[in-house]
Length: 212
Image 1 (cartoon, rainbow, N blue to C red):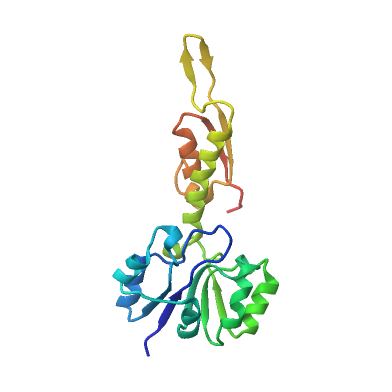
Image 2 (cartoon, rainbow, N blue to C red):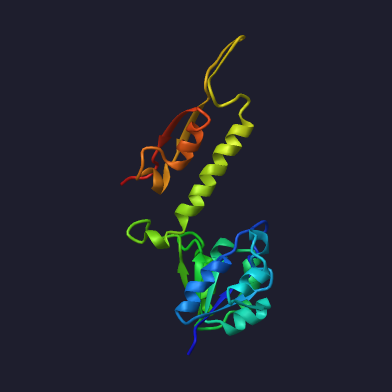
C-alpha cells in the first residue's frame, strides 16, 4: 500500500513558511510515497502550485489532504498554533501521524487534545543536532533568526557598526553582545550571528547560553 504524505497550508497568523518545499518531494517519491499538497500551501514561501505539480505532488483541498493521507507534515502543529490550529481537530483521523514543531514540553493541553483524536505526533524540536544532524530542524531556523537579529540591531542602533577615521575625528566601532552562539557556534570560532556582526566591523562578543 502506497504511503500518502500531506502538506497543508499553515494557518498561524503571519506564518509564511511551509513544511516541505517542492524539491523535497522527490526523495519521498523515490522511496515509493506520494505527496498531496493543499492548494497554495507554499505560496507565501515562494513555491507555487505549479512548482509542486512539477515535482510530482498532487494538489487538493485541505479537507482532502487530511482525509486521504496517513502522514501530515506541518510546520506549526497544534502545540505551536493553539488558536487557529484547533480548527483542524475535527478533520484528523485516528491512526494518522503528524510531524512538525509541536512544543511538546509546554503545550501539554494541545498535545493531549491531539492525542485524543488518535493521532501520533512526532515533534521536531527535541531532535538532537548531533548525531542526527541531517534531521536537525532548529539549526536552520536559528541561523536565519540570528542573521535577521543582526540586521535589525544594525538598523535600530543610532550609530554605525564600523570604526571610521574621518577628517572630523574618529568614530569608535559599535559593541555587539550576542547571547546564545547556537549549535554552529560550538563548531567554529565565529558563530553565524557573531560573524555577521563582525563583517561590518563591529566589536563583537558572544556567549554560549547552554551547558555542554
